[in-house]
Length: 247
Image (cartoon, rainbow, N blue to C red; front, side, top):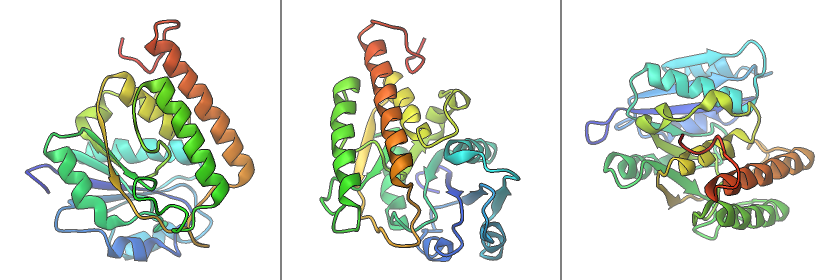
């Protein structure tokens, strides 16, 4: 708990058995009240390992529902647990759990209702192992998204995010995709409702066990990002009504 705010960390997991223990070891349990891990029908023993490591709430999907579908389960469970602050942390050790206190503090203090862990701010993405083509795509897509949304974020594609629970309650998450584009649709909803987004510098670690989508899926994701951005622009300028904006 931080500033009397109940903190719940959610972990959308798929085949994370090789990195889960390392990730969990750095989660600051002095401020994190509950951990939720949702195993999206992994082919390894992620769920059993999570239980053996003492994770309080382990949910296993019988069938793979996709990255977005996994997150929907994560956020629903966090709400059931009475979370005030929800932090999504990938269990693949790509993002440092040691940033949880800083991200939670920014939300609890009321400075920002949403905080992203940015791999770009500190300039260490490539040195941390991010493939060059992914870095370049990240920069180009982010520039396009900022033009469309009017925001000035350093990146939209991080999987490390902290939310005030009251913000999540106002988002129609079920209307979003069950695939990877869910992340961008969620941020489009946040910006469309006029909420501010803060960022903190986040070192990143790309290695063999870290989860990453292949080139083909990356292209599909990139096209989806462009589509979401254009929808947002049309809604923001009043050209066409967009579901990402408050009615």
